[in-house]
Image 1 (cartoon, one colour):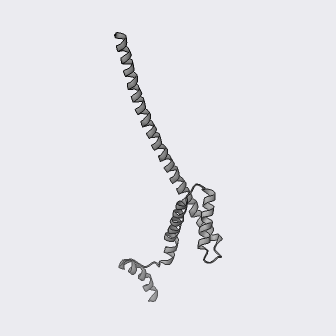
Image 2: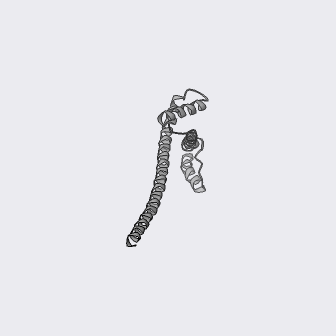
Length: 139
């Protein structure tokens, strides 16, 4: 009788350890899957940011290469995509389109818009400050 109770207790302890072990392995597996997906997403973001920076440089380089050709926008775009794919073969078509749009928007915002926008005084104070030096030359 004592031997049967001891065997039953051992079976109970082993079953409990099996359940705890299974739970622990399941939690570990889900943690590792989450960590893997986070790492993949982080690496993808890092590659995208690198490709974006290279794309900015390529834009300026291609602008110089295509400076003599009129209406070469589509040629520049395809050449930029081709060169980016040579450097970063894992980039998708969606990411290429986003990089192209981001680069062109940034160039437009930082270079083209300031060139086309005249410096007009925004306030009356700025206007009068701009006129003062001109008054002295008229007298």
